[in-house]
Length: 310
Image (tube, rainbow, N blue to C red; front, side):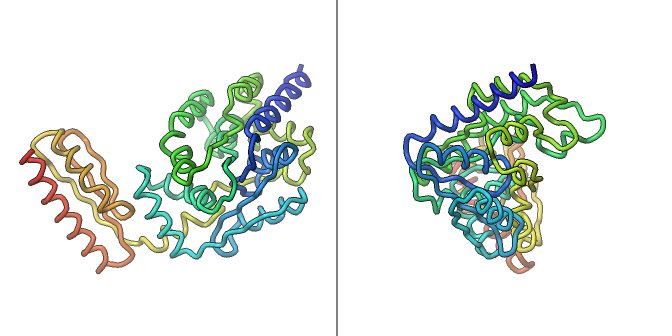
C-alpha cells in the first residue's frame, strides 16, 4: 500500500514539473530538498538556471553551492550586502502589500526573479505546507490542518509569488501545488507527513527519483533565516514608533491609509481597524525615525484634507 502511494507521489511530482517545462526555467534555489528536487527533475525536460540569493556567508548560499555540485548543475549565486538587502525590501514593498514577516521571507524570491533569465520562474513553494515541514507543526499539543495550510498559501499566491513573477515578466510555476501532487500527498496521513523531522514522504519520493541522498535528507532553514534577509532588516531597522489615529469613520480611515501607502512603503506599516489607523514607523536611527514620523504625519494631514473635500 505504501509503495503504491509513494509511486503515485513520484509520478505526480515529476509530471507536474514536466508540465511547467514548455520553455527554459529559472529555479529560485536554496539547496534544500524542495527546490533541489524540482530543479533536478526539470533538467530532464528543458534548460534550467539555478539562482541562489543570500547575504555574505549565509547558510543558503553554502547549501545551494553544495547541492548544485551534488546534482552536477551550474549555479548563479547572488551575494547581497545587508544594506542592499534592505533597499530591495523597500523596493519590493512599494509594489506589494505584504506583512513585515512576508517581506523578510519573500526577499530572496524577489531578487531571484529580478535576476532570472528564463521565462518560467519555478520554486519549491508549498512543500512545507503540504508535507508538514515547518518546525511549528511538531510542537507539543499542536492541532495541525495541512489542508488549510495549503489552501491559505494558494490564496496568497496571487498577491505574492505570482505578482512578483509577473512584475518581472515571468510565468510562475509551483509544482508542489498542482492538484495531482496535493491529492497524491494527501494519501499519506498528517502524522506521516509531519513526523519527527518533517516531509518524510517527500524525502522518500526524492530518493526514489534519484535525488542525491545528502540533499533528500537535508534539513533546511526558513528563507528569511537561511538567506540572511531577516537579520539584515532587523540589524538596520533598529528603532520604531507606533501611532493609533482615529478618524470620523472607517471609509475615511481606509482612504487615508491607501493614499499614504506609496509614500511610506517599506518604512511604515499601516493597518485599518474600523475608524482607527494603526501605524508603525521604522528607521535605522533616532534622527531618521523622527524625520520618518514627521513625514508620515504630514502625509496623513494632506490625505485627510483631500478625503474631506471629496
